[in-house]
Amino acid sequence: MARAINDRLALDLLLEHGPLSAPQLRDLTGLSRPTVADLVERLREAGLVEAGGESGEERRGPNARLYALVAGRAHVAGVDVRRRGVEVTVADLTGRTVGRAEGPSGPDLTADIARAVTEAAGGRPLHAVVLGAPGLVHPHTSDLRSCAGIAGWSDDLLPRLPERLAVDGVRPEVLLENETNLAAVAELRTGSAVGREDFVLFWLDEGVGGAVVLGGRVRRGVSGGAGEFGTLQVAGGDFCYAVNPRTAADLGDAVLAERIAAGAADVVRVLDPGLVVLGGNVGRAGGEALAARVADHLSRLTPVPTEVRATAVEDNAVLQGAVLTALDLTRDRVFSPAS
Image (tube, rainbow, N blue to C red; front, side):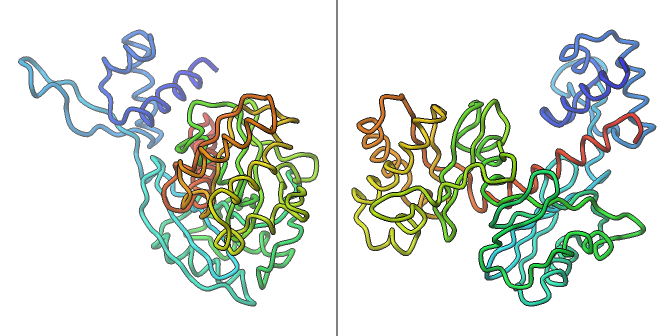
């Protein structure tokens, strides 16, 4: 167990810092010289670490050999399933993007997803594939309810994908997650919520919804319905109709901010998250100016102190969250002693 803990610690440090020398690993882990030497050798034999380059070229004396993760040891895919198409990103074990693809979605959605993932993977076996889709995803069964207008969705889509995506006998683990939950993962790890354990995401896009993160974890609820803010009552109707992109385009900034704040106030009063992130196309387009207006209105509606920020995730937050989730699954599997 001690060896497994030390090995995982070293692997996580290589993920965080990039290539490191044995002395650097000793300094960062506090482990002894023989222990570090043993773990480096174990990780090399397991095909997880390789020697590459040297450090210390700027100083006299022998240079220290650098050790790096074997990036090609595993690959993962994130998939954003939308009404109008499928978008895929494939990354290596370090998180570096190695392939992208887009394609239409139609009646045979399984084939459409498999085609786009296969194109993005470029013949590489995949260890995990995470799909993001609109709708309620049961946290234990992965059953999807109310898949908001995506043609071709069927109950047997997930079970069929591993075989369709198998390469050289490797069948990936396939996981389905609600799109806004994945966007929240991206905000937590790379976006406006970095360093925060508690926040709520308001997803203001072609589908309006949200996600709840408490204690650094996405909260899904018993049936997957946590964060479904679209049915909150705002301006005499559902929040999802009051602030969707088509409606937002016809509203002035002040009215839009007021409506978002009215919906956020109910959530803030109950959860006291300390931070609200405005995501999706509306949140990105509005930027910090919209966030400031929402914060101003929110401060008048509830005494709970709450910061409001615009999304800081560039490009597709759902896709980024899917890749990050797939990487977590794969690293836990590949970095385990049994691997």
